Image (cartoon, rainbow, N blue to C red; front, side):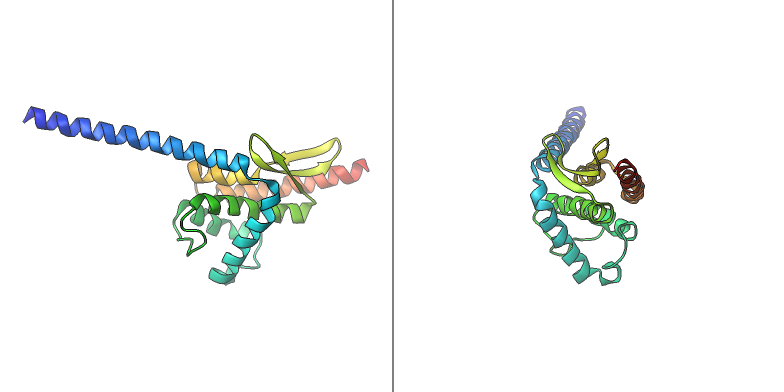
Length: 174
């Protein structure tokens, strides 16, 4: 009886250890993929998500980034199925959501993309001395792993304020 209980406990411990190992390995793979995602792929990835939203959620197709944030959070966390967005590759969905957020911010606040070897596509606001870099694709990946409801919305609101401020500073410097 004690032997059987020990075997069950050992099995549970092994299963938990493997689960932790696998989760860390998947997390590391996701962030490695984000770091290698070229900024030149951002527009195509964001466009794919825009098409998905238009086809499957037309009620928010023309909404602001803030208003789409709850749907984006649900997609990342798997609460709402991606409906063939890229079922085989949840990481592609994370990259698309980060691209979509960044592309919207770039369009609204004259942001420009460049590659960052540590964190993938980087969105730069402002010019010269008044310049700031943000990482919306990395933020989407971090949200998938560690986020709580409302985090993406808060990020978008803060990024809008930063973009607005950096544009104001760049205008004042020129």
